[in-house]
Image 1 (tube, rainbow, N blue to C red):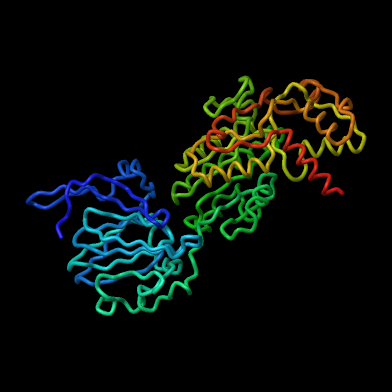
Image 2 (cartoon, rainbow, N blue to C red):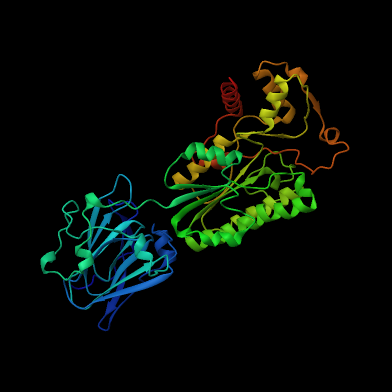
Length: 475
């Protein structure tokens, strides 16, 4: 069969999610032919994954009928033919609703297939002296096959119609011995790693994600952000996303000599290291940031505003944003005034109200509350929906409030007189105390996250739910 010359470059999906067939333009004359087998810029525009290949392999097969596979590997691959023809077969061996789906395709030099991690790949040569090539985005090693998932070439469920019957084909003994589909343990999806599992956001993520086998949680004992040398002990190719919910959050403490060192290490140095890992292994990095990257002068802070932190904590968070944005696949999620499990402003005000304490609360700093549950849901929406990478503001919706206004609301909702809250200026509140300068206005624009399909609850609704849950726990 002659090669079809001068086709247009196209990328088509198949019944197996992520498995894509690529028609390649081949240019030929009486001397032979030429093709761009892998062309990142053109192919990604057409819809092919920018999967970051690091190794190129070639399988040369001397005789027609040589049959290899079905092997599902723990990396993505891009398969094509240099010379000859093959009959390719792919079976989804990933855990999920498409487990067992099969796709077949005949390939010559003018066609290629992108094979995502966990999809079984096999081929049978249709001509002598066929060279089968594949790009992969991880380096092969001697122990790599321990992570493979195999399927028998003759599996009756897959029911692949091999052009040359298997009893007349050249197979390896290993391929003949692989299991039937009913006995195959599906390949698990790559994991999500949540760093900072014990913080307010970490606990909210645990509540949303639960005990899913593809989610791993790490606190400081399991993953010390200040000790990056220990990070190399993990198989990072096994992760699809890292959610960095850990941070040094002692705003005033960051102004001290020891706090300054620790806050720079955790808030800036760690995101830089995580971004390097994300780029090296094709992982999506989600980094949680803060309104403190701004000086609070603007009436509304959007994602494109220039960074202008007022204090050391803000400086470290701004530097962490810059570092996280160097990851090709990144979501930087900026929040403000976070409320979650454990001690926080809302729980403190509720406690003071119940104990008969009348607090003085700052009234000239304005912003919106960010309930950890809504932050967690927003992050998962970005990951699940495949939203465009970049920076997103994420707080609860509703009008801006001052700390004093929120405190009065807590008193009222818990059945106490809001008049017991005394509004004071920031200057009066911190008089005689060492403290970091704080932005006067922390209101973040939510247009971008809403355009991406996620609208958080209103602050009032979230506050009511939070206080009700507190009351239920105490009751």
